[in-house]
Length: 86
Image (cartoon, rainbow, N blue to C red; front, side, top):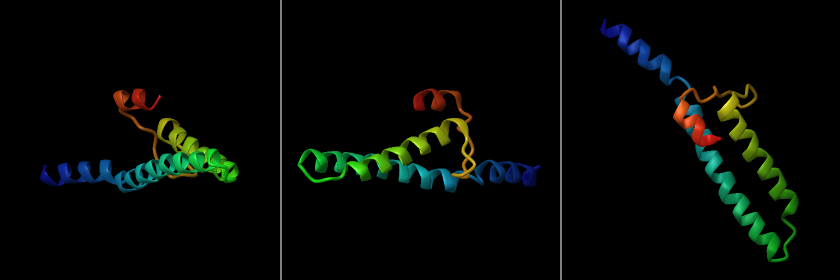
């Protein structure tokens, strides 16, 4: 019984590291978008980089909601968390 419980926990946790790393990346995207938009407003040409960052931000968000094989993450299964992402 103990081994089955451990196996259950490890199977459920196998994607946690990937998801945590993508969450960090997602946070970085929001910081970069803020920086790039402020630099653009200050007169520096950061609009192209802002657009690239925004597209990656959106791709990651859609990956969390719907599953994205290219990001190698499963969709968020928790109903409450999924609603917060929408």
